[in-house]
Image (cartoon, rainbow, N blue to C red; front, side, top):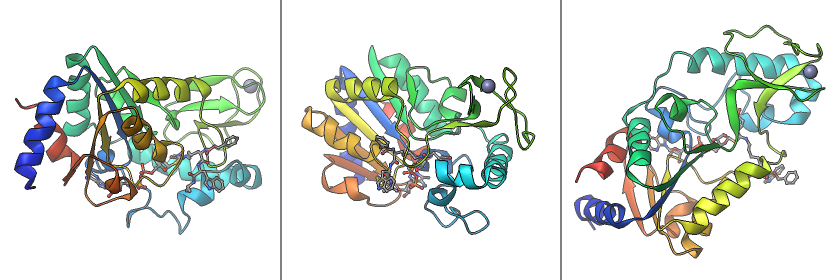
Length: 243
Ligand code: BV8
Ligand code: ZN
């Protein structure tokens, strides 16, 4: 099917939907200038996210991990939501039952005005004490290395879910509830490689949702989705809202 008819089908599904769930990944922020993880710009000093975003890496070399996060904080601090983020914030207003699940830690959905939102991998502007567990917002760019807790003085870590760490139970429950009850599920800008998020499209599909993938390239999801639009999120997502 040409993308024209596919787009019409998706628009019709959206106009009839009573409950919409959206999952986003780094691809939606690529158009804001935030590097994706597995694209050509996914490396930093020849490390990969899987090497640095782990409790073991932080245990071994907290300075190196904080330097990586400082590099990303400095970069993300200058980035703004793009029309795809804006369109999803508008979509939230149009449906009584809408939920946005993001794997991104850049905070751009929140900046765009999204509130019905689960940041399932955390947020780069939040820090957590390794000792007393206190969570606080910290927007220092750069953050002093090594940062210490205002309450107990112990070492702070990013309040981000690393590989091998569990997602927050509340985020998992809220995401599952949304996926189980949605009749339309949009999967935008994710390579579908990282679990449990990579399994979310199947959950929605099994629950009877019409599942749509928006991505530059085919992904492991492509085999199970009901419709796919190939292209940039900033160009395609706003088109969904045009009647
Ligand atoms: C868990 C925070 C269980 C870091 C992230 C072996 C050892 C240890 C663990 C595992 C293992 N094997 C499997 C696992 C589980 C592991 C996992 O799935 N690993 C993968 C690599 C195989 N998962 C976990 O560890 C998770 N926890 O399973 O816990 C458990 C249970 C009980 C007890 C203990 C543990 C935790 C996963 C969270 C990891 N943290 N981020 C940080 O960001 O600082 S994941 C990281 O990848 C980011 O969050 C990112 O969002 C996420 C996924 O990547 P994508 O968002 O998809 O981005 P990517 O670059 O890959 O793709 C971009 C896509 O966009 C592409 O498709 C591209 O085509 C497209 N695109 C590009 N430009 C555009 C576009 N599309 C549209 N428009 C454009 N312009
Ligand atoms: Zn503390």
